[in-house]
Image 1 (cartoon, rainbow, N blue to C red):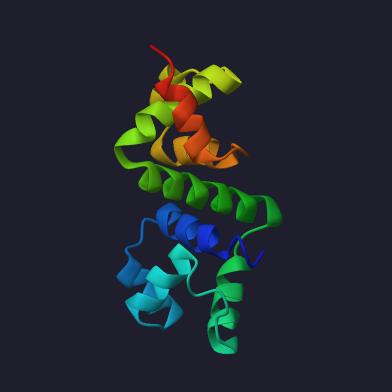
Image 2 (image 1 turned 120 degrees about the vertical axis):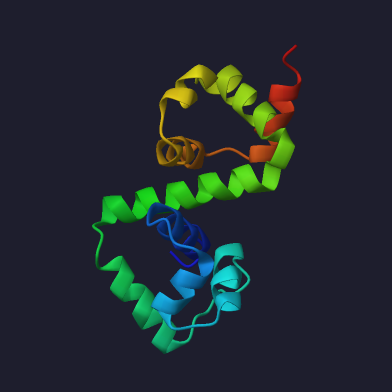
Length: 133
């Protein structure tokens, strides 16, 4: 779960529609710590922070926590790819027969959840999407 902490924190923040500052207030840490948690550069929270994160996690069952991780991973993929995200969507359609039109029918959270569940390197999927003419 340590590796997935960055996705969990980001997914929770997006799911609750909080800003990084609002989440920082909830966790009783500076905003910079939330940013570092979301990017995975703050991998070992202090015992106090870990306890506050655990309190947040207690609000969700294991399936819901996994969904938050998928949502966070989906947001991170979209952010990392930037303008190439459209090629990623094309690549998904080619590889997994996921119709990009179906993404338009999903709400933002559903879209990010679907993207976060794909267990492939996002850059490889985008490269495959670029090859579609």
